[in-house]
Image 1 (cartoon, rainbow, N blue to C red):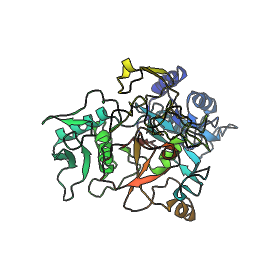
Image 2 (cartoon, rainbow, N blue to C red):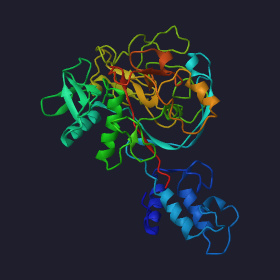
Image 3 (cartoon, helix red, strand yellow):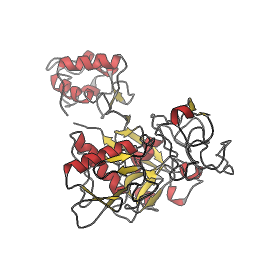
Image 4 (cartoon, one colour):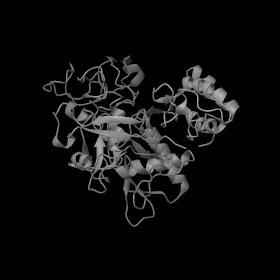
Length: 420
């Protein structure tokens, strides 16, 4: 990461004072222990600066990055690097580092959601929304323009130039539930579905898009598309691990059933899912599919971030349901992430293992777990528009073959926080 000059550091500090974003704590420089490196820490750092050999001022050890008992220009250079991460990438939010409790605290789910266990996860940036059809189509057009990355056969986009044909996604010519079009030269999106989450995309297609997005922004790719191994820590986009996904989904709180923490119930007002009112925690006054979005057929997705807490109007959204207006509750969690309990289930990086939680605990619970070393299925998280509230619980886990393309599955992206 490029260090900033002293002048640009001051400008950045002014920007934060006016409401700019905060930077993650990387283990040093967080003077007030709030988990972020921001203007308050900058002010404290200035008061801790000492000349060579003047010693460490009381309370300033948090800024002594090189452990030489001085807070000096060498430490200032390191502080510049940390402070320089102040602005998250567009469309992403910081998920701070730290430990959380993973698993089903209510003991009401499947055995594979237990035992509840502590997991320590590094800071990362997570996409606020699931990747949309428009974003994926843009990635397809970019990949097509590069030559040799993708090929189209029978309405399915495949990886090009490999002995194994990995399916990436469907187009409307290959599946009626796809929202990606192909006119012979360009990929597009079915009218009105641009802002809906991408569906009919395989795990391979989600991982490939991570690489395309990285390349489009000048970042290194994480995935080797020959072996599909992931290079963690290189600075590109990737799929979140299962632990990263659940930590982000819990929104900084513990013991909640759903991604939001103000209540342990779910309603159509704040999520797109299939309501079965016999579930004690499903209190929606409307049943079955969502009354705005679930009446059109497959897939009954809603636009990313539709559940804002505002009164929504059919004139603005052109939903297929007959209601002309619909009051929503905020579906965002404590980190500001949307659609974590419905709309589409989300591919995660990990291989799925039904007994993985216990084996992880038995292994000593190392930080930043990446899941089992191999498997037949990749993890899916987050429920969808076609499943009930049970599947929308934040601890619910499932898996599917990585090549399958479903009308209820999509993904969101993660970007690691640089630590140097």
